[in-house]
Amino acid sequence: MASSSIEWTELTWNPTTGCDKISSGCKFCYAEIMSRRLQAMGVEKYRDGFKIREHEAALAIPFSWRKPAMVFVNSMSDLFHKDVSLEFIQRVFGVMNANPHLVFQVLTKRADRLAKVWSDLTWSQNIWIGVSVEDERVTHRIDDLRGIPAAVRFLSCEPLIGPLSRLNLDGIDWVIVGGESGARPRPMKPEWATEIRDQCARHDVAFFFKQWGGRNKKAAGRELDGAHHNSFPTPDKKRVASIV
Image (cartoon, rainbow, N blue to C red):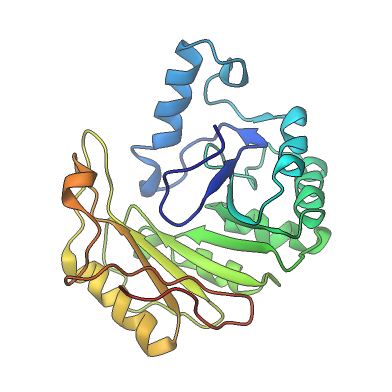
């Protein structure tokens, strides 16, 4: 199914699958767990489990989506993994370029590779690019992101496993914050989330609070200080949606 339960998107598209761990945020990777389940169920796309695979047939999928929508690219992988060929990345970008009615949200932990290959890609206005920033040890990814000529640049601070009290938000349009969920989630302190929210407010950056997480994320909910924070950016940097 392409429809997504992720609060900040509507559809998912996985032209590649598989990945490996590179930082603390990867410790309890949901995509790895899900890939193994799908492999055990006999789903052909996941016959190799969590090994990096490029899926030629998946390149046609966005052309079947006629209505405008937000699309999370590679919820089950990382498009800028070293084992994904540049040629395939370029073909993925070609599909995104050819579907301007869709907004493609690309999230990576491989900001270093993104910084090396971005000039070989075509950045149409419907491509948003983000990096994962789970704690202060990986804030260097933001510096790589800042130089990318995307319509929207965003941070995914999920799972937030440490404070980010001095974020440099220059050139950043959107920040998503969420706690870890699953069987053994690491806790997120409330002040970590509110510090990021307040920094976003000071710098006029859209802020989205996704979840508290925990073993029962639905029960924990997604209210922060009694409100839902659902701001999205637009390419002209004006916010759409608001705190409700």
